[in-house]
Image 1 (cartoon, rainbow, N blue to C red):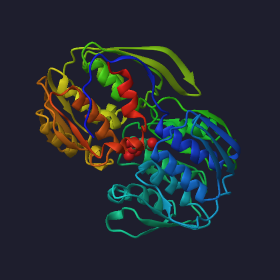
Image 2 (image 1 turned 45 degrees about the vertical axis):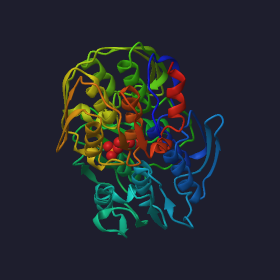
Image 3 (image 1 turned 90 degrees about the vertical axis):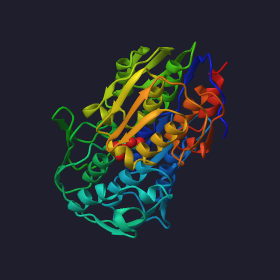
Length: 429
Ligand code: S3P
């Protein structure tokens, strides 16, 4: 796809619902007794994979794609039925890992598989703790990747020190903990997104959080109560417009109703560190998930150092932060972000290759990258590697580069933001 040039971005937009919260609403709604109604559901391919998997396990789910309202007719903690077919997770790591925590405790076996990217992503990180709980995984591939079969077992609680700050790992263990004998505790090295914990509380699950959020204990549940869930706009999707509004000349954009959960708001901190003109208004708390409108105006940004405990709070935004860094004066250094290598693509490699192709001075490192910004970018052909966050990042970079930029595999934005290119075009004048 050839990318349109960007100038004078003006106006308001509402980005689609949060991907992480949408996935969790399908899973907890399926395990609850009664009908859970979800509004603002993300109609991205990843969340549709979660719906399809739970439908295959006997859950009736009505998805009104015109209103983004989903009704999940939950059958209780023990109401899932054996899937008659493979559980196809598509491109979705969240579906794979969270659902595995549930499957590990079911009285049936299930086969989980996904696309070429999923088949390369590490699943040992969930197989290890879930196996300690008694789970029985049968790997059908080498290197503990998908496809695999999970033979459901009776589980017991564990105390797990996770080597990685990953909400997917934490959530898989906590979901398995719903079914285990005895309590299950997970401690992570740095706090990752806490949507599972917040939604557990909403559904009436007994959890205890300590150690500044880094330790969570779940007590096995007897039943979950159906809920109404309103999904806020996804800050990871808003990030492309935050960046575009800051680096496109003569721009002012307001993004309405964005989730600003403190475990996800690292992009806002980075914007401030880079000197951005950014303001929040209409801040509201929506059952523990705060939301706000975010207004950005064109700013001359400067580089900064991004490292340590902030990394899990902005891990999905690093591709677009790297684009902001390319337009900022001075050096931006990103450290402690080795997790980028095991996302939908190896984001250290892919960002470095593509930014270099556009003339940016970027050095990939083992745990991040160093970008010396402030020089004009030149149009190039860049490969998204079918990674939605890479495609969206280069739609912004390419829109501000001289010459033509062509994104290979640009349609993969469908994973988390099907209307991304239209929404961007609507702000462009
Ligand atoms: C997610 C957690 C993060 C994030 C992913 C969604 C979630 O992954 O990158 O896009 O919904 O729990 P990790 O848990 O692997 O860091």
